[in-house]
Amino acid sequence: MLKFFEVHEMKEQLGDVEAYLENTVGHLPSPTRERALNILRAGGKRVRPAFAIMTASMFGTEKEIIPLAAALEMIHMASLIHDDVVDQADTRRGKGTINALYGDGYAVYVGDYVLTRAIEIVRQQPNSNRLLQIMADLSIEMSLGEVEQLRSAFDIKQTVEDYNYRIDRKTALLMATSCQAAAVASGASEEEIDIFYKIGYNLGMEFQIRDDILDMRSNTKKLGKPAGSDLAHGIMTLPTILVLQQDFAEKEELLQLIENRFSGGQTEVERAIAIIIKQGGLEEASVYADGYLAQAKAYISQLPDFKRKKMLLSGVDYFKERTF
Image 1 (cartoon, one colour):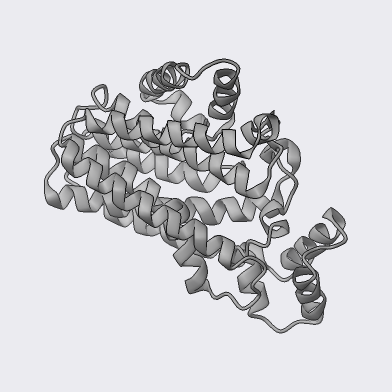
Image 2 (spheres, rainbow, N blue to C red):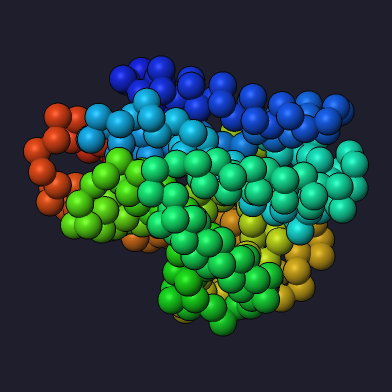
């Protein structure tokens, strides 16, 4: 969990979200329960519920929003379980995956259970009809994004627009929905709901680009997976796409490594990363990420002078500083 959220006023609410999540997942039969709890505890930094709570705090509904915030994280958790099946991943942040221990079919059904429980929680919230429509739209777009990611694996002709299509659906829409849904459940005006959606969308785009940078910059100890894991699976992230648009001496070597699907293993992945870093791919991608953060701040400036507006701005600033 991001340190920013641990030291500010949201610590108590995020603790409530964590307890709600553990109680909900705890209804699974043993031993699946313990494995699902491991995935839950290793599943991320709780950014989505954090920004849902911060959105709700603008309207004084941060305590009432806890179940919805938990449901949003469960949707994310379900996507991780399904991702592990698709990627045939053995571990996630050092913990054994459900598919590795119990098989792909078992993991798919656990992911389905978590997703369905999230929908049931949403159904019990204020303005549930609208929230359910929002979640249905989100699920459709997330699925389309995942299909496109599979279809485009190792495709060296991808453009920045192709990349944006994927991460829009893979990451940005879930962050946007987290803020939007919290605003809807809190009784915000249509104008405020729209602004919070745009804040979340830009944060989600920044978050995924920063993840893609960290995927090449960090190590297994920090990320829980080898450096360049996405690239090894043929996922063309922004640093790679930007570098492939250039002309440089080692371009043919990089193209061959990708087209041969890194047949030599992790050593070839690390060689590709070295070329991408040398060509400035990480710095160029960071410029894009900073642009999305600036957009998020611009939308925050349009909000009324809420008491906790400064906290929201501080949370946005922390995105740029994260290292895992």
